[in-house]
Image (cartoon, rainbow, N blue to C red; front, side, top):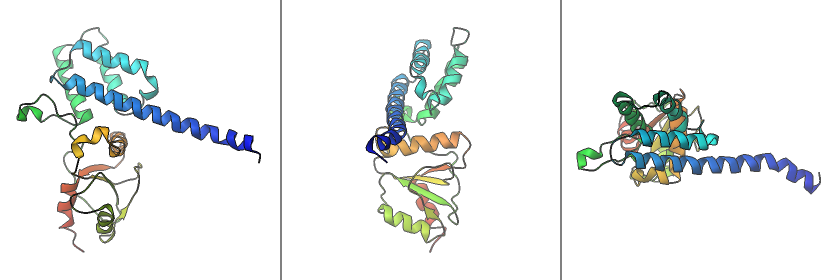
Length: 217
């Protein structure tokens, strides 16, 4: 096979990689916009219209979480040209849920949209024949140690996020900055799969550690 043919064979995968990279940057931008909207704890009609306009202008990510969840809801809310108080409340709740809740008012702050989107209520953890993916940094030990805890209890570690994954465990160190970190992409993908019906639970290191005591070696 000559060089030109090899290059031609590679073009689809190169285009797909570049497209995925662009989509990831756009989603990160979109989440940043949502955080800005949530900064004052309210969603105005102008802000809702801006979000819808952004998604219409970036249709390549309209099918990617969180745009895929927000687009039809915002479009429906603005269908009559006005955002009433009930629609505003529901949209605010949806935006908060999309990027991770809001406990900041308890601390005298406006928003803490970087809160992790953990599965609620936190599920019980079964180790036998279950797959675990770890992301972030862990107080409990290095990644290899975490993997060994799973293996010794009958489970198996996974390196990436798939629809067949059972648990994504997020390390506590630096977790508040997940939206703008490398492991944030894993969390976004896991959240998207879970929202689509995949049996995937997102749990904290603390919750995972508690279950280690229930399943001793």
